[in-house]
Amino acid sequence: LHVAIIGSGHAGITAAITLRQNADDIKISMITEDNYPHYPRPSIYKIILGKKPEEILHYPKTWYERKEISLFLNSCVVNVNSVNKELLIENGKTISYDKLLIATGSKSFIPPIPGILDGPIYCLRNIEDALAIRERALDSSTGEVTILGGGLLSVELAKTLSDISITPTIIDRSPYLLRKQLDMEGGLFFNKVLDKTFKTRFLFSTTCQKIKHNGKHITISLKDASGMRNHTCDFLLNATGIQNDNELPNNTGINIGKYAIIVDPFMQTNIQDIYAAGDAADIESFPGSKFGIIPTAIDQAKIAAINILGSEVPYTGTMPWNTLKVAGINLTSLGDVTLGVGIREECVVIDDDKGIYRKLFFKDNKLQGAILIGTKQNLHTLKTLTIHHASLKEVKKEIKV
Ligand SMILES: Cc1cc2nc3c(=O)[nH]c(=O)nc-3n(C[C@H](O)[C@H](O)[C@H](O)COP(=O)(O)OP(=O)(O)OC[C@H]3O[C@@H](n4cnc5c(N)ncnc54)[C@H](O)[C@@H]3O)c2cc1C
Image 1 (spheres, rainbow, N blue to C red):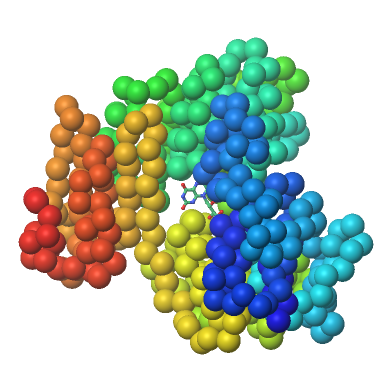
Image 2 (tube, rainbow, N blue to C red):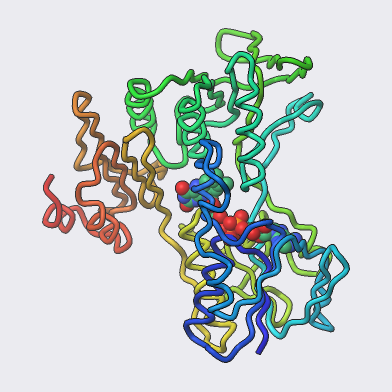
């Protein structure tokens, strides 16, 4: 059996490891357009701080040799011939397969703001992007950078840039940071804690109407409740989300859903022997799971790999969770914290002096999500309780409230 994996990100590497753990006699090929073997995406901030790409690689090339995984770097797959079971690489090379996993991830979403693409705009997805951001940041005359978007990536980027003497301004149309991970009160609390730790300006409830690249600097026309005004910066970073590159599956006749490749519960596409996992796979049919996060990519890749080897194990979804540590502040968001109607907030602790925020979210007396800022107390217990949708009584028994 020859399994080809397109992509060496979190889904690709997890699938390769799972395949090898369960079958030592199959042939595995990993084909990636990356110039480097697998590295965890969250490590690329370190490149902006000056680390060399080789320092963030998870496994050296010898690891792939030892595991007998044939690694093809700099190899963009442009087409899949699903009848002949053959991949066409940009350089003209072809690779045949028996079973294929598409783990091609996603790319940065560029918002349709007039003028945005009339000059350079920086996004962060891979090592090359991080090197380019570092070079531009070190070359900045004023040290003023604007980051579009107020999500996890923006916060991490802002902290990273402030460490190399850049003053970031984060602009977001929502009224607070990390809207996917925090409730409004949590977002405003996190903001206050961040304000004490590093220098960043935040412009919330603000939209960008137009962008003008003037050679040396960039002028952004902003709109907020008080009207229109201009904001000037040296360079622009876009962190407004992700989107899928559906060219390859489209060329192959693979069905695409709202965001990405449609898969059945066994992670198989509409084409026999072609599977998809990670950001490349659509999540619409798996309620409760979140698209574009590492835990989802890992869970799906494990299931895909096992099924490629002949099992029939369904993917049942992934509880979303994010943990990060920015400027020494721990932040965890578990499950769904944006439930809206019918939600009850319980076990709430808000301590401004200690910088601690804890809130648990219940719906129909079932634990659906939790936010922890400035503390990791009971983190693992809470994770288990959230997965099992424990009742308030069960939660109170397990954790100190
Ligand atoms: C800077 C950064 C920080 C992040 N931090 C977090 C975090 O803290 N927590 C979290 O949960 N998520 C985080 N994410 C999101 C997370 O990294 C993704 O959800 C995850 O990487 C998805 O894994 P994947 O394998 O599906 O895709 P990716 O990791 O994006 O890998 C896709 C792979 O496919 C290759 N590829 C694409 N097209 C082709 C082609 N045509 N031919 C050959 N190869 C191709 C790419 O080169 C790459 O190797 C972060 C993302 C970024 C960019």
